[in-house]
Image (cartoon, rainbow, N blue to C red; front, side):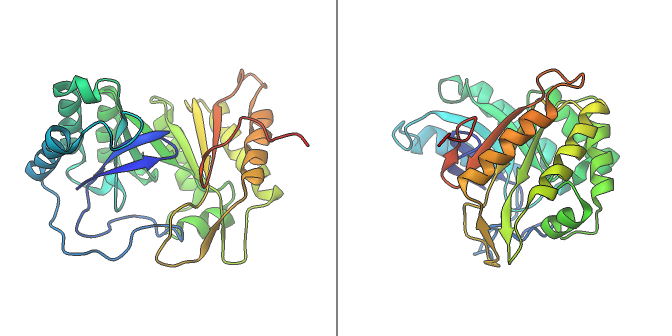
Length: 275
């Protein structure tokens, strides 16, 4: 139910919380999803989460598991957290664990990773907003700036238009980090038209009042059951990041959101190398 991982985007050790340890539960079917068939595993329970957190923090943590402290506690796992009836309960347990163990978790962040479909339902919007009010960051997916790319990457009944409306409505009141997967799928890879389309929809979100202080661009790094995806080269990720910085700055937006690009091996320099 908890799983420590060296995370590129957390830039160190992240302690994951899986709300769906027994079965994948998601509103998307992304081709790059890394969730494999499940071994024997029990369903989520608050008591089990508390016990596993206590075991890890009290007995297993030696300070040598990784070269860095725990950077964050991240609710993600095998599916979309906003679909779980236990999300708010799990968030409260994570908050209490950080409060109880300032020696290990005092400087750790709290993160919920979402595919943004929860913004379309009032009940889940309220749960997510309450979690943010208690100190959680929200990393929200936006995989594409055109209907064609979004459909390819999400493989869901939701449209890009619906997702943008949901993001705009939620982020008008709560800041979010946008996270975007850039990878090749089968014989397709995102190109210049896709970059322009993505820049346009993010710019429209900002102009419409969405609070987006940062954007994470990242690529395929772990194997997936379908085996259909491959990573983009670092040079292409860096180019996207540089073009977005130029496109989203100015026009009344100030410097624009901070944009970080993560290759398969980690954070890339802010600008591509000059040759």
